[in-house]
Length: 248
Image 1 (cartoon, rainbow, N blue to C red):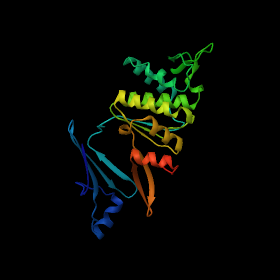
Image 2: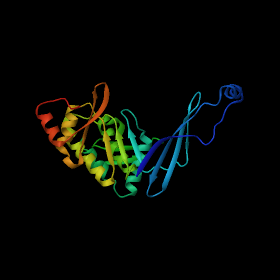
Image 3: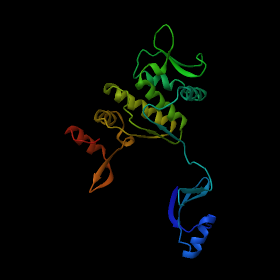
Image 4: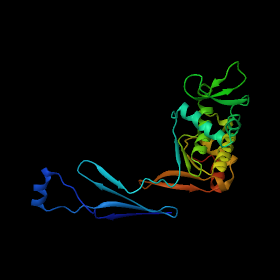
C-alpha cells in the first residue's frame, strides 16, 4: 500500500459575490491544494484533496474506504453497553472464554462473566463468589481496562488498537501477566497494538514478558529543539534497564 502527497492546482474555485470585485481588480491569487493519493491492491486508487479557504479547511474525498479497523482506548473512556455488545460478538465467534481467562490474571477468584441486561441496558457482570453477580465497572479500573483492550482487539480484528496509558489502574505486580494476555489477544485477532506509558515498571514488564520479535519500544526525544522518535532494540532495552537509565 502506498500514499502519495503532493501540491496540486484545484480544478475549480468558488468566490463569494462580495469578494469578486476585489479579485478582479487585484487579479486572482494562485491557489493550490494538498492532494492525497492512496493506492491499495484490493480497491485501487483513492484520492482526497484539502484546500484552504478564508475561514476553514475543506477536504474533498472520493471514497470513505478504510483499509483496516482501528480501536482507540483512552483512560476513563469506554461505554458499558458497548462493552457488553462486544462480548456478545466475541461469543458469536465461539471465543467467549478469552475474556474471563484474561481477567483472571487480575482477579483469580473470577468464575465466569455474563452480559446481563437486568438493569435495562446490557452490561458485563462477573461472578467472583459473591451472592450476586457484580458489574465489571465496580471491580476496579484495572479489570475494566484489560477487558476493553481484549474486546477492542476482537472488534478491530486484522487492524490495530491504540491504547493510551496502558498501565492505568494496574498494580505493577500483574503487569507481566497482563502483557502476556494482550500478546495472546493480538495474535489471535491479528492486530497490532500501539500503547503509550510513562511507567518504568510497565516497560520493564513488557520487555521481560514478551518475545523480542513481537515488542518494540519507541521513545520520543527532543533533539536540537525538534521531536524525534528513537527505537530501542531488545539489547539496548536490557542494558538501559540493568543500569536504571531513563527510557520512558
